[in-house]
Image 1 (tube, one colour):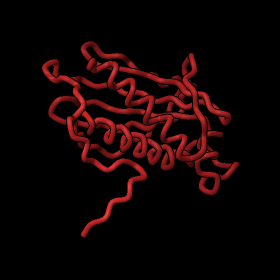
Image 2 (spheres, rainbow, N blue to C red; image 1 turned 30 degrees about the horizontal axis):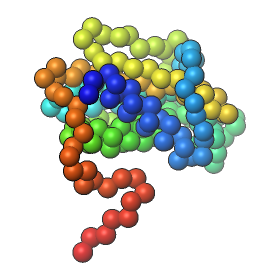
Image 3 (tube, rainbow, N blue to C red; image 1 turned 30 degrees about the vertical axis):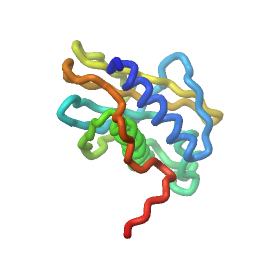
Image 4 (tube, rainbow, N blue to C red; image 1 turned 120 degrees about the vertical axis):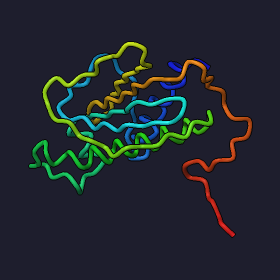
Length: 171
C-alpha cells in the first residue's frame, strides 16, 4: 500500500476517533485552520521518522475539557491540554501503524505559539494536513515524515494486538 494513502488514512481516522471519544462529531473540511497554538510530537522507527501536529479552536478545547479550561483563560492556559491532545492523537496513530508492523517511539509534546503557523512541506517527505469541522469549531492535524522507500505498508497477517475498548485479562 502507498505510504501517502496509509498515512492519510491514519491521521484522518486517529483525529476523528479522538474527537469521537469526547462525543464531538467531525467531518473533513476545506481550507486552513487558523493556527495560534500548535502541539508537535516527534516519532521514529526503523522504516520512518517525522512529526505529528494538532491545533484547534478554543471552543473545541473547552468542549473536550470543560472543567479544565475556564472561559476567562488566555492562550497560555491551552498549552498543556493541547499537548495532551497531541499525545492522544499520536497514540491512536501508533496503534494504527502497528497493523503494518511499524512500532514508533515517541517524543514529548512541544507546544508552539505564534501567528500564521504553517507546515513547510520538505522535499522527499510524506506530508498530509487535514482540517476537520465540528459544531464547536475547527481542528487541524498533520503528519510529515520520511519513509524508507524499500518499506512496503502491508497489513500484518495476524492482528493479535488489543484495540481500544478491548477487554484484556492477564492470568
